[in-house]
Image (cartoon, rainbow, N blue to C red):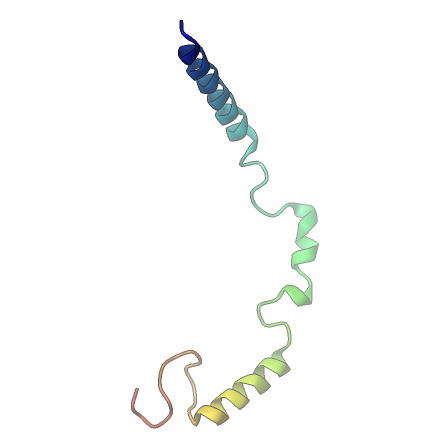
Length: 81
């Protein structure tokens, strides 16, 4: 066997070993662990942590745009969507 054949064989064995070991432990850390759930349940982790500030921001946005409803949609309040 030539040096190229030996090198390819060694590389193939290393890739196979890595794939087998990575598959056994690679998916073990997916998801939220039970001891991490308390951190995700904090008020600061909510999508809308402060309802009052969000309501004020939306009020200012709608006042400046002269339109109501449909946050994030196209249109300028003049009816010419």
